[in-house]
Length: 161
Image 1 (cartoon, rainbow, N blue to C red):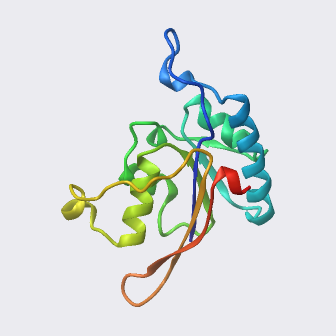
Image 2: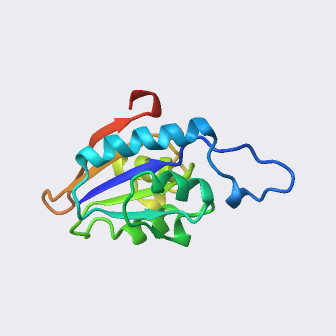
């Protein structure tokens, strides 16, 4: 299974009168999202499920793909590693899953999957990896022995696309 983590592009700063979930992308963020979407659309299979946080900045980032997007409350800014993995059906899903979300959850998911930490026992010591705004982390689960392994297929920052 492929799990693609895409952090929303650059968003407006929090300002009086604007709730966090209603912050949109800046003009630079809109460009970042378009460039990332162009790159992703070159490599994503047609059957990829696209899941997004309901926050406006994530919806706008995902919209750049011009694919069907499902909004998932578990991917909101207060989301958890467990919620994201359950929504993606990791690692059992047959199709690739692209998740548009937030820090620190995306960084925690990357750290958890790549280090093999156990959520229950290691959750207190697990620290989020830095996933920059507009960046894409492409992870792949491969069946190996009893547990399987996770490989990093690609990391692209907004500046690289």
